[in-house]
Image (tube, rainbow, N blue to C red; front, side, top):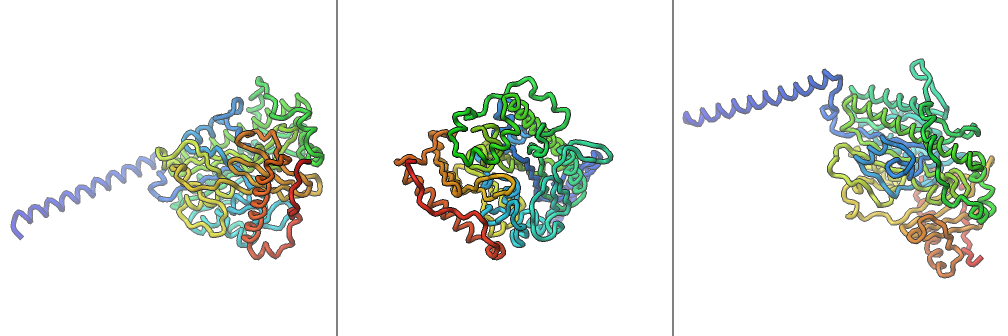
Length: 502
């Protein structure tokens, strides 16, 4: 080796050493800076995102301040502005317990077979719920808030932090009484604080009870922190669509005596009560919004905000005096549609603000597992929504979905339903009550005109009805052996040909 070559190698080694020292100093300064503010950016400890799933009870799709002329939800609006809002999000069963199991397992009610009064979700279904999948994949897993479901197996196998709550107006936290909505937020903040020193990513399900009514409190129904008491006091709530007497009288008798009418009497049977109760419902939504802001502030304080994907949704829709009915359960848009927001701070410049494709509650499990970089169980019936966040027009996506409501309580009357919603048609079969509905959603998005008796739509009804039967067959075939061996559910669809012109 000649002298010039030796000098070159010495200079090269020296420069590499200096560069290494500079990089080490910069990294050290970054860590020191973070430590002086009591936060270490989580990107320094884990490359996988945290996943925060937030669920509100009975929050219907149009009750976001971003789109609603009265309701105020500044924190949810901000998430929607920074993330993607799904304009056509739905549940496959509009009732809380069933929908929540569908969210966790990625399965329809027809497959997982869980609703009130049914056995616990099967062993396989419970083992495949997304918190268990992520926990096995190296994630910390947490659950806070409304539970009210039955799952097989041990909670410790799916949750590292488990705080299930029954509905109440207030709770005790660190010796102080506070509204339950804020208490749920504080528990969520506790888990975030505990996990900040871990080198593991985490997933947490935060399930608010609000804005669900307190059924035992017929006087007030909806509860919220006292600070919201005067909110919306100076506004007049517009009448709900189809809330006139003639529309109600045109309903079949079984709907007139259903739980929807029973709870209508609790909430909307006078103009004064309608104004009071709807405002209380709005306040309960705004309280959830503030709690979401509290949790997000904790993410910022702990340096986790930039590495935490947030998903917000409702567990089913909600009637607010439409057709002089209350609640959910039936199959109209008010029952099935929900708000759904996905905000991924890692993709600030690579997402679309609104997605038009159909999203379902059974998609959540696949989406969260996909976010975690894990393989979804083959049993999942939903799809990951992540492709829709960036290139929705290029995606081959569903154009229809099957929905149903199987629960039949003894203490009140809920008529069972099955149905199909496409981009154009809505078909609903109240199969135990001999009543069907068909709506042309393109011409009649408000679902005012039932076309079921129209001779010219006979072929449409036949096609949609046959598709419903096929979905039922497919989803029942996808049950596990454990579920197949159970006594069959009492809801078996009448296969008789639909009647027309009545």
